[in-house]
Image (tube, rainbow, N blue to C red):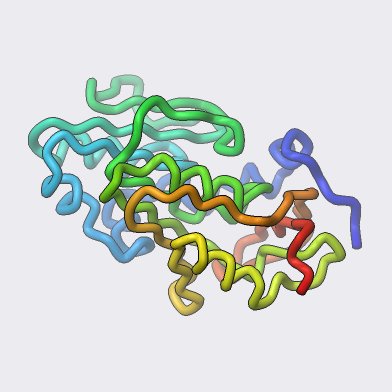
Length: 219
């Protein structure tokens, strides 16, 4: 097994800098990838707050800021400061930060990540933290490939992972490769991140991705 990377080394990787995935994706693409009409969801909740992790250029967020009527706050976080457009609607805030370390102020009605978790080291840590940032009836939904989670020896995580996700109140659909959480959860998962492999090769999207290795996954 190749040497594993910590967060700092991983974020310098060319695989993490991949600009073919979510960088230019628009709101319609978000809807398709997440199986959710985001504008309708936000419209149904006056004063809604939406957090998008690994937002790329933020084009989808700009669209939503202009398309959704009423009070709304949108926050986008991405590792690279390559956001679209010099002007930003007052309802939109874009932040350059690592999603493994960033902390929000307040809770959110909707939290999303479109193909961003494929390039994160501690995927399970980000998922658990996002579940805790929801409002009581909020929704977290993200693209997630359980096959990218590995034991510390490199073996597949297997059923222990999916059982733990379910026990924490998280719903993983292996067919659509989506993970969801309805309502705020303290989704502590009993696994310890030990490093990431940026040489894992293409995942189901056809693009090179990152495998995340954890202690505590052995049966």
